[in-house]
Length: 97
Length: 97
Image (spheres, each protein chain N blue to C red):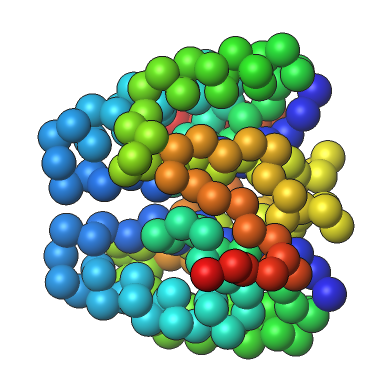
């Protein structure tokens, strides 16, 4: 399995941009979790990553949007630091409500 | 030196949010480069990272904003994939104008 970080640069001042962000978020949430409005932690094998990229490619606006996918090290979801409203919740952590 | 990815979740529908993003971008650009509107690739030693975090902490709105800092592997700036307007330019690549 690979740990990836997917960042999505999209103009959310338009309804179309917000719609694309919602769709990309829905796709990504099948592979990991949303940690910021347009940043997603992804866990997947190689075929899954290819499927993910293909599905996202059909949603985004190539002219206006930007997607970047980074490979993280094995402990990559342990962020070095969070500031502000950011809250680090591990993928395997229990969430107490 | 460490390779880090800093992601900044900020509401840019307000003038104050846009101002904070501009200031954070100015700070981060001293340590690396801006690859998306609110994603920055950082190269720094440990003291530099601490200074960076301290400076950003003085700018952001703790209630509204979120900063996450991820550690990347040694070849971490080689993105797995870009889609859309994203353009991968290496830190050491010549930029032809």
